[in-house]
Amino acid sequence: MIVIKKAGPENIYSIQSLAEVTWPIAYGSILPQQQLRYMLDLFYSKAALEEQMLQKGHQFIIAFDNDEPAGFAAYSPKSIADNNTWRLHKLYIDPNQQGKGVGKILLDHILSAIKPQGATALELNVNRHNKALGFYQKTGFVITGEEDIDIGNGYFMNDYVMEKSLSPA
Ligand SMILES: CC(C)(COP(=O)(O)OP(=O)(O)OC[C@H]1O[C@@H](n2cnc3c(N)ncnc32)[C@H](O)[C@@H]1OP(=O)(O)O)[C@@H](O)C(=O)NCCC(=O)NCCS
Figure 1: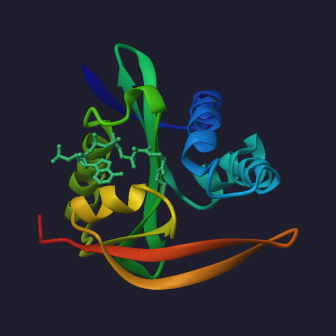
Figure 2: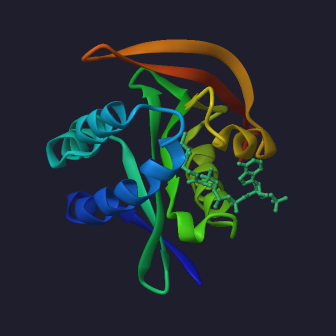
Figure 3: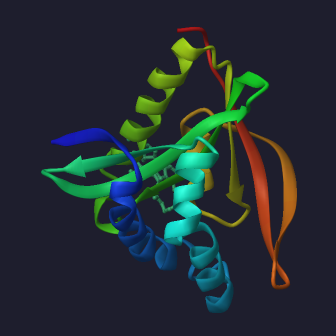
């Protein structure tokens, strides 16, 4: 049975472990090996995750399958000034658990949490070659733009911006 729990700094090791097994499979054929390592270090170091959780206010949640971490997500309002649009920052499911509904459960959990807080839209960035694009289209997101984001060291994230409109809670 899948149980969703809020996550904090005490869960950083679990989040890092899930990212380490998920990223090479999700991005191995899209990004050069060096860029993949660079991005994991940039976004998933202990300091980076603590900053996202404690300074930037990203809410992390973990899906547990019989007490084993099966996937995680992170979300927050897009900005302090805008409580209508929210951002889905991360959604990663252990490759052994993909295709069993865990991603949908995490997404539904987020929608249930943000709608009562006034959310009217959930926005995200996804690599333009990521198969997850199909999952997002299936779950009601539409492409609203493209961005090439300079992340330093000569690397770029070549993303689609996607958005799902939300009906009031
Ligand atoms: C993309 C991801 C989050 C989806 O989670 P998941 O648990 O595998 O997906 P689910 O089993 O909940 O699927 C829900 C529905 O979406 C469909 N779906 C899942 N992945 C899909 C894909 N790549 N393309 C099209 N449809 C997809 C499923 O068939 C299912 O449809 P149904 O409701 O008709 O049965 C997960 O596969 C993942 O972590 N992928 C690698 C990491 C990644 O790229 N994350 C996104 C970063 S932006």
